[in-house]
Image 1 (tube, helix red, strand yellow):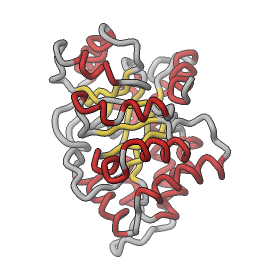
Image 2 (cartoon, helix red, strand yellow):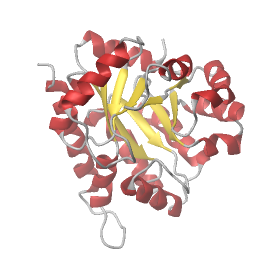
Image 3 (cartoon, rainbow, N blue to C red):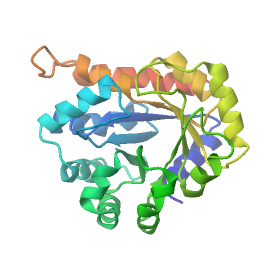
Image 4 (cartoon, helix red, strand yellow):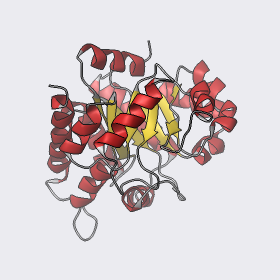
Length: 276
């Protein structure tokens, strides 16, 4: 099985949901970005989403947009993003934690889909979340990703009805990402009742694990999601913790890494206690 399938099988055996953490590659700089990436599993991350900075991130809220700008200013590139994953695998020896690249199709298009998939697989990437790739266009990426052994995680929203869902599920693998609110990242939060109802609806149509994201900021909110979904995804709130570790000139303060990891540990504890 893939790392993603193996991880979700392990979570199911432990009767708990997982914590999916999003960080932006290269934020606030390449060296600290690697230290953050390297420390995520120990802090409690079960799966990792690594954002690919892009100049026009239309689905991202202010926090992730700012993180992408910091990373681009610090010199991040697609090659350096892949190298972060490669170094993670080599230097930590971690062959179990799934890493997914998240971002926009422009990054794939620039490299060419076949080469992009081959390079990502060689670096140790397990999945893609391409937020602006609709299922109608997924044939541009899916065959190359499948050949490289990489899952394509597709997104659904509260407005994805029963007529639309089969088109999404046709190309989805690894897990299904439910965007719990309408709008950009890092804004409002969905109620537990809404999450419960939407997850129950999706389970009628797929055996894939279901991860829920957008708007989760506190351990209690993560726990509320974890009571119903297979994973809770936290992104903007983690990125905000990175920014909080920078001074007014954008230089890292001594407590940046401890602050980020303490926050992720609290989220992980919330997820782990959700079903006990």
